[in-house]
Length: 309
Ligand SMILES: Nc1ncnc2c1ncn2[C@@H]1O[C@H](COP(=O)(O)OP(=O)(O)OP(=O)(O)O)[C@@H](O)[C@H]1O
Image 1 (cartoon, rainbow, N blue to C red):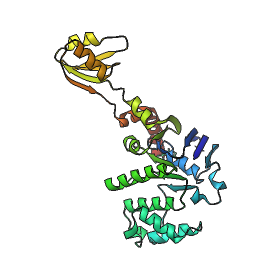
Image 2 (image 1 turned 90 degrees about the vertical axis):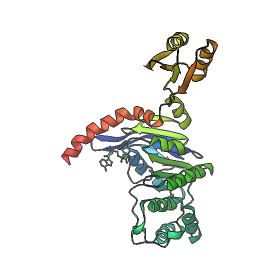
Image 3 (image 1 turned 90 degrees about the horizontal axis):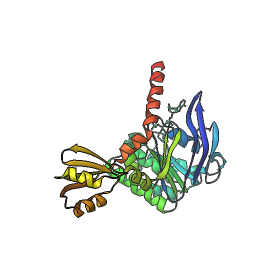
Image 4 (image 1 turned 120 degrees about the vertical axis):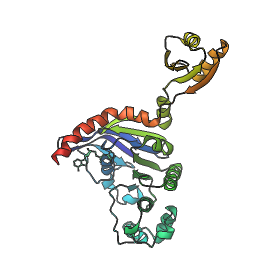
């Protein structure tokens, strides 16, 4: 379990992570989402002690990372900027890591197989494709059989087969009772893997919800109804909580009633319908709406910073 409480990071006068509180629970995949520059990597770096908080706390399995004597057994992580010696083979890289924790060769072979790296285990890491590098990073994260797994943008650069592999692996790890956290700036991809969502913008918590809850809330796009009798249908559907707009002479967009209710009213009054379609707001759209303000603020800030550089 990861618990962040009022976690804060400032660089100079810029607050990059702002009183962030959230929990990554065992048995769940938590998607950690935010637009570029929202503070995801900084938060993850603080979780594993690569950056120290300016304020607040974050613990892994009840203790701060630095207080664990064998951290690889507590939390396995893959952060984007992970450095791997390019001249080492994948096997030697994992063996070197294993030695730091007294982990044996058997476990190294296991994670190599788990990550689908058996055929390239003897190759130099410097010659690895991006996808192979991601697999190696994930193998390293799993080496200590940790109860918590944290991955920064794990599907970045992976081909469809690799994406599917990561998706299935993370679900399996959560089903085994581990706490899994993955960061992303892609809502739709994350919704396929995660069941819990922590969404941030400008370092602040914007939403702490379930994927089901987010999908439900995003479904408020109304119902498209096409009929040869739009005027009659309009008056039949009218009510205090119902809004109706038209896109063409035969099409109405109705909010405040679901497709079933609209269909029943039309049938009762003999109004022919030739389309009745719930208009789901796409998850990506809903995510963009939620984070829009944060993105605008970021680009306003980023512009002068870039000029100054
Ligand atoms: N060492 C640092 N010094 C100053 N500012 C920093 C430092 N590290 C990060 N930042 C700033 O903190 C903000 C958050 O960066 P961070 O990398 O945590 O965001 P992110 O959500 O991971 O973004 P991305 O999706 O682009 O990786 C950015 O504005 C970044 O420029």
